[in-house]
Image (tube, rainbow, N blue to C red):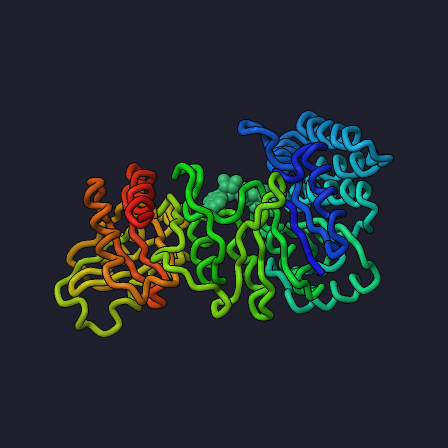
Length: 435
Ligand code: ADP
Ligand code: ASP
Ligand code: MG
């Protein structure tokens, strides 16, 4: 059997939801369907989830979200009318608006897009609607995977065909909790695991994973097969086709993830499979991904490498300030720690002073406006010259490399560049390996 998850663009309006219904009903194996809230209908549109967060903010400010909520209500009413289904959600709309006005929680507000979308699709295809709050369980903000899996297995046993809203669950007090943004991918993976699916189909608006972000590189090549490890690196480093955490529920039992295009269902898409099942190919690199918004903390001290406990002292400062780090390449007399701008932004001066003091550094500097780019490939370790191709490409494009880190897995090389060079660096790397 198959578990499918449909993303926001697939659920955007009645005509895309009709395509979703056709896809699900075309194969009796598609027994469980996880949905996102309606996303953008066109480039400048607003996702329902973002509208719901806006409702929460409005209600928190003035106790009334009726203006933004009316837009959401109209969107769903248009969808119901366009699908020609006999479904009256007015009680839900009234209850939700009332709860948001009472400033329940931002998580509650945000989750209602998925809740309503699942009700609509369930009606359209004649499947049961199951509320994710009943079996996706959180405790202290953390998702309780094994407990939820048990609850979900029991529920699914009683419902052979069902639509389940993605993105949210609830805690022991019954309050709604959400995953981070894009989290319906995680919900889909959990359902795939509970249902022991043959494949977890993740339906979106592109023909699978591409070797670079299609918004940056023109017409990047499609990736036919990707290993779980490569997916993890690419997704974590910004290839937001799939949530980086969506791999954990399926990885240990080897359920493949198939990224498919709702708007071109016959395309094979990308198969994400266990590391030892990935088919051989000759590509040196599999893909490139990147993220903006980092700061490098550069610590200089002569003979730093001979000083026992040097890194620990620097990292203790970050730990005390509650700042996690992404990378930490080091030289003989220098250490670079890469952290996200969001975590350090209000503490910059404090961190510089404390680090300088903690190790008696000769110099501590911060370089902001850094973007990280990961070049990922399972074949990289076995090939000579990968790094030289990458660095020559960046040099040729006159891009200054601020930081280099090759993961110990030799699955990726990460470079830090100034954010103004981000797009051109990705293009330079892409074309250098395109062959
Ligand atoms: P959904 O709403 O279906 O969950 P997302 O917007 O989360 O879809 O993810 C799909 C989008 O990810 C694509 O439309 C594309 O713009 C973007 N994207 C970023 N990097 C890549 C990549 N390497 N390959 C394919 N798509 C990518
Ligand atoms: N609707 C949520 C979001 O926009 C979750 C998702 O789409 O996966 O982040
Ligand atoms: Mg998504």
